[in-house]
Amino acid sequence: MTNLISGIKCRDELKKNLSKRIKKIKEKLTLTVISVGDDEASKIYIKNKIKECQSVNIECNHLHFENITTNKLVKIIKKLNKDSSVTSILVQLPLPKNIDENIIINTIDYKKDVDGLTDINIAKLYSNKKGIIPCTAKGIIDLLEFSKINIEEKNVTIIGRSNLVGKPLAVSLLNKNATVTLCHSKTKNLKIHTKSADIIIVAVGKPGLINQKMVSKDTIIIDVGINRINGKICGDADKSVYKKCKAVTPVPGGVGPMTVYEVLSNTLECYKLQKDKK
Ligand code: NAD
Image (cartoon, rainbow, N blue to C red; front, side, top):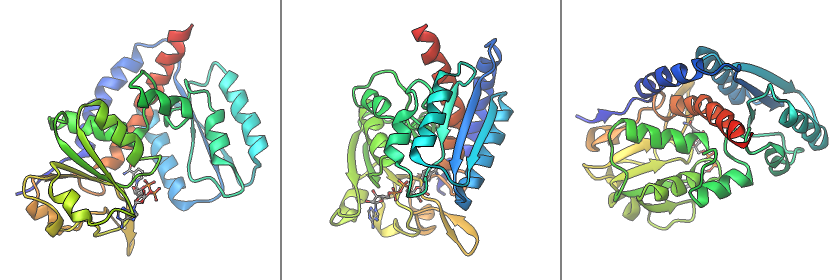
């Protein structure tokens, strides 16, 4: 029977340790979340992040704007950068189309960039230097390591090349000595790449994209996709793969809880980066 890799179990274990490390710090760690507009999924994600932060004694401040310009938001972020009581900053994506996402993200001081999406943190990841690693990529690495799944020397096929998930994940895995194949919407014959993989990581947002014909029996599947069908949440892997492959992360309860956990973990990393520079 296929092994289910529980992100909830992993998150709970890692959180115990993180909580102990945070308790030892005299200063209060704080996360400021910025959101704009009325994206329904974002509201749920933010609620979750705030609840999880509070569980490890990280204070959360949520700044929500119905409407705002890029310039005004830049000013607000610059103020937060200077505020020593702010440990980390998270801009909830997607932003409305009138706002320049690239300018906003890169206004965040890289030492407060909890999502690891500023150009500076991405460059650090590329050169394998200490910085903040994007939460989903870091969450997947932590989940594999916690589950004692060896990354080194493995053939890993990632499907999805977004700046948020696929690309930073590919680099993170390369930094851990995996052999990485990065597939996307223009990849011909996806099956060739999935069949030969030891680990498949699918981050597309298309339910049923991976089916049992595309996987081998010893494959491990990390399902990042979040899709809603008739009010139910499912991933990108068809349930038929559960019977065939070696192990799989369920949706919900797999990568999602790990991504949120890394917001907490990265807040501590931000604190440490800021301390290092003083
Ligand atoms: P995105 O839309 O930015 O990127 C999707 C990627 O899939 C693109 O690179 C595209 O080339 C590729 N793609 C599209 N159709 C394809 C096909 N038929 N075959 C192969 N590749 C194809 O999305 P994203 O932000 O990277 O998110 C991907 C999915 O992961 C979404 O469902 C999202 O909700 C989910 N997600 C989950 C978490 C989590 O914590 N579990 C975090 C972030 C994103």
